Image (cartoon, rainbow, N blue to C red; front, side, top):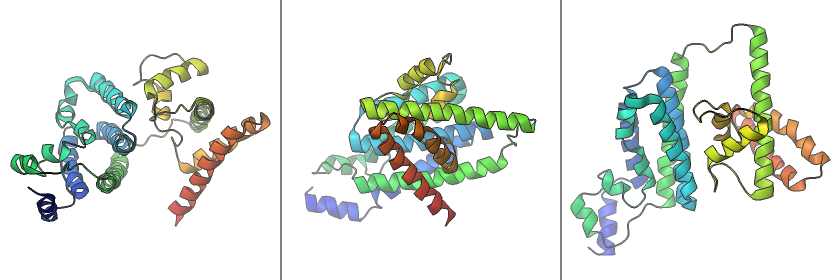
Length: 273
């Protein structure tokens, strides 16, 4: 089959990113039927992070990005045991296999795929369409799951204030560590370094005992840095830690903080429109 025929074949098919997102939505909808509300929330949050990593992996081909995904998957397997089987059987890791995913998901028949003359990989546009569609779908699913969830209120007003202050303080510490490592050593989670390894370092520096990733509040925050909570809270935390670096005249760190602060403030304004 010539390259012209390759193009003619693709014209007769849906766009690859759209096709893959349709398949993924069907797979996720089916597999979530096996789990309760809290489990669905945890698994969707895992998938949200996975599709972000798919984009990063496509751009960088960094094995540490896939490693971070695999570590989270392993932690979920340990936690869920045999209950994890339906999710594991869907093999969502195939979405990292850009060369074979179209064949795996039957976009091409085996005969069509073998006859392709060109190396018919996914393009950046295909990945954008896939991951954008998945972000919108998963965000929507999560929204309605939160509406079905039991209230998460603390038992007293004092406990509520203490919890907020504790979460904020730990997040500020992690943000400070994040910018120190990024500016000083070009190290950051989901980049060229493993989230689990950075989590264990953070436990050491913050003086908190490390047992497992699944039980680590630091891990849950670190894998979402710099924005763990709301955009408004991120802005408060960034403004809180910035003066410490300004006093030390650590200009590189202040510039990184200012960049993320500006983006957060833009996001906050955009969300209000």
